[in-house]
Picture 1 (cartoon, helix red, strand yellow):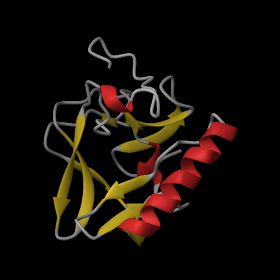
Picture 2 (cartoon, one colour):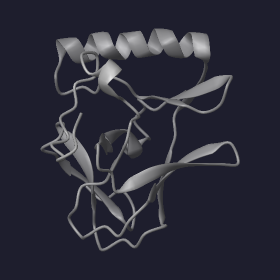
Picture 3 (tube, one colour):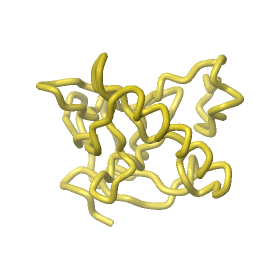
Length: 142
């Protein structure tokens, strides 16, 4: 499914669904905005717990769609109008996060080949391993 001029949604080896490059993408391109419902930090904790519970019941569901916006608010990206929620984690990502004017964007941090899966680091480390098991398959995977 076409998302925009750069991206499409497809099945992923990392986790059920993923976002892929429709064409070659040079480094430094803003690919998509991460959108959703704005939540307070307290609301966000409750929503995140519910997402984790749902993913434990159904392995095709992602565990966490909340994204830190600032010190006061997070974005819950688990909404139908946010295809960016399907971008999977990688320990060797080809994209990064850019905060600009109170918004969250995913941008390429290196050249991306046509057909390559789009990924960014969710920021999980060894302390998060049991709660958020990594499936990225990168050589440097935690």
